[in-house]
Length: 163
Image (cartoon, rainbow, N blue to C red; front, top):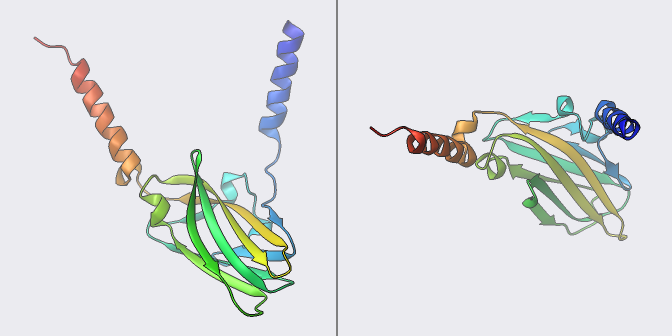
């Protein structure tokens, strides 16, 4: 039994100490966010997260080897995927860009989020870029922060001894 626990502990330690993976840019394209090449960033290391203010508007772009037909960006918030931007392109442009308002996410909570951007090319191929976004600010300025603070106050009031 001790051997199994030791092996499991070593396996967990190896996973925790593994270096962060490089940001994913899959497909025949390059991608940037806020002017940064996301292929050079880690998609899992918080130190590589792109830091933004809650009211920022963030730009992203793709450059591809075939005309771009559409692009979009989404953030993973808990178990949900929130669509941040979506656009359809016409013509033969090999690059495309979009923006999204960080307030779409920061109104819910500040912190670290996984974001994914996609581009579909005219020849049917796709490109995907993934990165981390750190929304800075006070947790009490968000819906989740206010709800949590209210729950603490109510729980404290409910447990206060009555005379």
